[in-house]
Length: 125
Image (cartoon, rainbow, N blue to C red; front, side):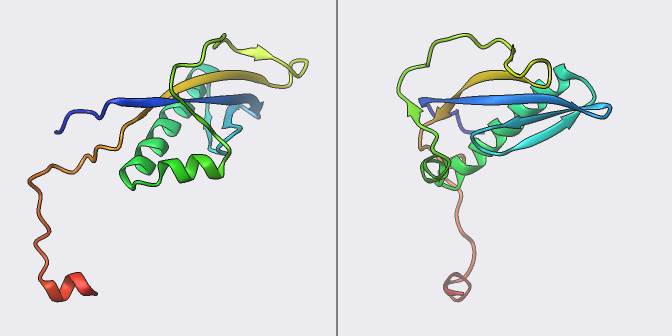
């Protein structure tokens, strides 16, 4: 497995958590991604994992910058400072948590020795 690309910058996102029935709904306000979990702790872990995977997939497709730009999310060169604690900003109806995630550089996860074994006719299709 190739080494991870160096950190290129950081994105500063906001997660919103609230109860829906027996579960917690976690939503990234900037990207619109959401997850459900039975506990707040699991919801926090699941949304962070989902966003990390989403950003990694966009990076692998070489579409991360455009994806973030379309959602008005800026890549910061240095790690933004500030509290990362859960905050109740809606009188008990929802909790909010800022989260900073690293954005990796442009290196591809494809091994440099991998080759496309299709014939030229298949490549043109």
